Length: 406
Image 1: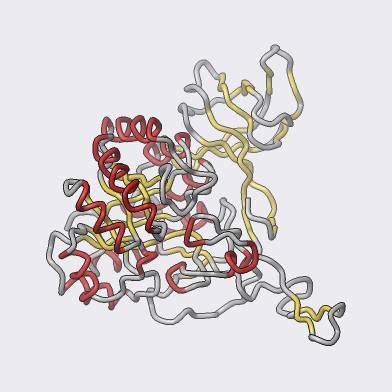
Image 2: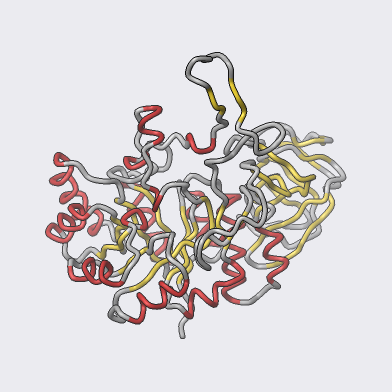
C-alpha cells in the first residue's frame, strides 16, 4: 500500500515554501474567487502561477479552494476562472457547491475537482453521485468515523480518492455550516467571512433584567461552551490509511509559517516513521492550539477533559534562518523576543532535536545586543550547529494560555 498524501495549507508564499520544504506532498491555497478565507489568504492568479511552478518543480501538487457556496451571478465568472486555473497548472480545485461543480466541469472538464468537507459527504451513495458528476476525490465530512470511511472506500471505484482532515481547528457547526457570524455580524462563514463568534465569551441575560449578566460558569473566569477542540490524529494515521484514506489534510490557511512548519514536519515524520510518536506529540504542543482531541473518528466526541477554550503553546517563534550557517555565523530574521543565554531550538526537515545556546547577537550595524527585541530585525547569531536556510528557530517557554487567536 502506498503512503497517503500529506496535504498542507498555505495562506501566502512563505507558508507554501515552508510546507513543501518540511515534507508536504501537496499544498492547498485560496485564490481570488469563491474561497472561504476571502480576506486574508487569497493568492492572485499571478501568485497561483508562481506557486504551481514552484511545487511542480519539486514533484508536488497544488490545489485551489473554490468552496464558497455560489450565487447566480457567480456562475459565469466561475467558468472563466476554472479555465484560467487549469491554464495556470492547478492540479485540482476543491468545491462544495453542486452548481459550482457542474459549472467547472462544463467549462474545463480536464480540471480535477475535489469535493470539499463543506459538502458534508458522509455516505458512499453521495460519493458516487459526485463521482458521476466528475469529481475525482471526496474530502469526507468531519463527522464520519473510521469504520464509516472504510465502508465508503469498499463501495466506491478505485479511482475515486478519499481525503480526510487529520489536524487543526474544528468548527462547532455540522461540517462547518454555521450562521452565527452571519447573524451577529452580517458576515457569513459560508462566504469566507467568518468572524469566529463561537470563540467569544458569553453570558446569560434575563429578559426583564437587561443589565444583569449571569456567567455561564464552566471555569472560574470564563465559559467556552461553543469553542471546539482542535483535531489531532497523528497517533492513528495507520488506521486511517487502512480505512482507505488517500490524503491526510492539515487545516490552517490562516496560520503562520511557524505553525505550518511544525505540523507538516510532525506528520511527515509520523508517516515516514522517522521519529518516535511521543516526541512528535511534543512538537505539536510547541504551536498555539486549543486542547486536542481525535474528532469523530472513533464515534461521538469523548469529553474526558474540559475544554477551557484557550490557546496553549510550549514554544515561541524566535526567528527563521535566512541563509545556511557558515563558519559559526547564522543570519536570521527575528520574529519574537529572545535574549543571550536562551536555548535556541532548531526545527528542520534535515535534523531532529538540535539546539544551541544564544551566546552572541549582532545586528545589521555590527553592534552586539543582549536581546532580540525589534520585530523582523535581521540579526547574526553565533551558532555551532548545521542550521539550514528556512529552518525555524524557537525558544521553549512556560505553558501559556490566551483566548485570542494568534
